[in-house]
Image 1 (tube, rainbow over the protein chains, first blue to last red):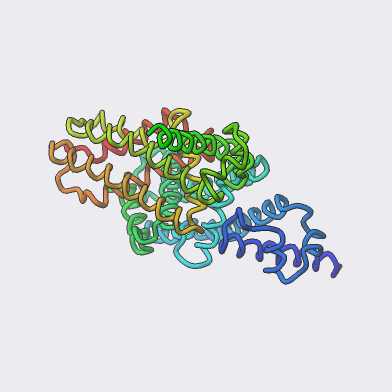
Image 2 (cartoon, each protein chain N blue to C red; image 1 turned 90 degrees about the vertical axis):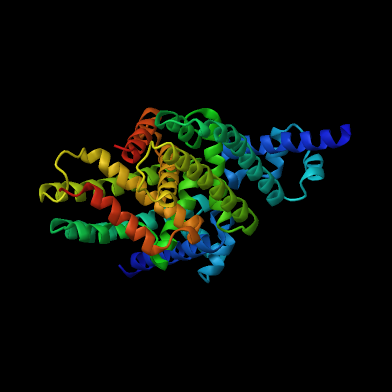
Length: 199
Length: 199
């Protein structure tokens, strides 16, 4: 079914173009016209795939979620044989340490804010939160099972605190990169995990 | 000089109308037309005060900063006689615990994202970050001077960590209010400060 594949590939290609426009100019400037130009197609062709700009944004946000979830799938395998030190590597997947993850963080932040006033985006945003939380919780449960972190920890609460730390690092790195380097993000995560380690 | 006072009061009134529109519909939907309607003036009259929508957004963001800084001035007085328990009350000024602060948080978040692609807004956003950081640092220095927190703490680092915690609480409360109550925000701050307390 080559036509279906083409259709999906074309949508994907447009979604990635939207992603680049959002990153460069912000969500509020990501017009259908600009995204079509970035994707090197006409606005008319774009509207064949996405009738409205909100539909396009929704697709783009889902694309971000998918990318992140693909990384999660890999992470979930790493979690089985986790150590405190490899846990840091897992956590570094959730903060902007390289260009790809900076782009994800930027799109995540912009769409998170947009989601405050858009029920469909809000649903996607909530799902991402939930899915990150569950990955963190699974990691902590495995660390606990292996006796690597304190047994008395309330893991739901610790997963939430870790989640908040990751979001805070992302936010500060995006807004004020001069106040926090990638090295410092890594060291704050190491410090945090050391605080959970069993004696 | 009644005219000047009127001019400033009118600008303030428009800024507050912009604030409400942003909170209700998001920054990307805060058009000059809607803000004029909210302020019960014509778009023409609004343009007498703000030539462009970015000028209006800049003014609104400064308004948020001013509000927050007025609270800081009060806080700085409280800091002199601070205790670990009153420190929590100081910190609760920086997270959305009531409607007024929710509105501030929403505008802050929306404009922070917009600031990523707007140099003027970015400058204001950086100033706010700096000013919050300095208030937190002053508070920790006073707590340290009074012997209420561990003497070996690196206060610059602790101020940054506290700042990140406040932003994380704000973000999670705004995006997923069902995952964190005001009571839980307060208890996480209490827990964090207890971790700094001298033995």
